[in-house]
Image (cartoon, rainbow, N blue to C red; front, side, top):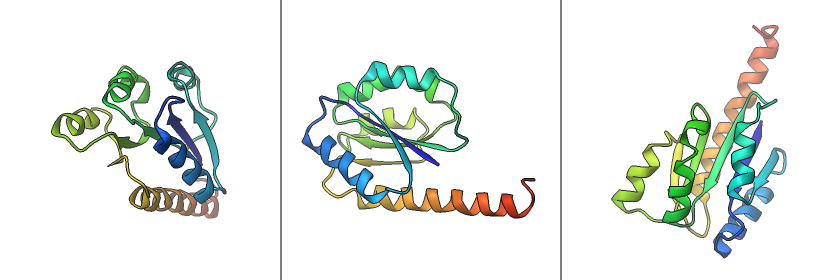
Length: 137
């Protein structure tokens, strides 16, 4: 299991807080962080060696969200969690184009997002255990 974080280098201080929170709460997972759009785009174009990746996209502004929409084709079929800049109907409408597993809004705690990540990672561990007990079938 691997977490792929996109938190742009020019994100507000809330982006830094979010990145630290994820690293503190999910120390057992490999976390790959991208702070530039081009770096993230390059990573999406690479073939992944991991079966299970969760992409957490921190969009601190409508411009950042719009920029990421150009990558929707590269994100197809990926497990995506989105942090949106606001809860307006227009923003929520754009978010649905990503087909995210979950989305929330920029806030101070991200308790809801952490709960979803914990559930997703625990389910993955259970799947691996069952798969290993069945001889990988």
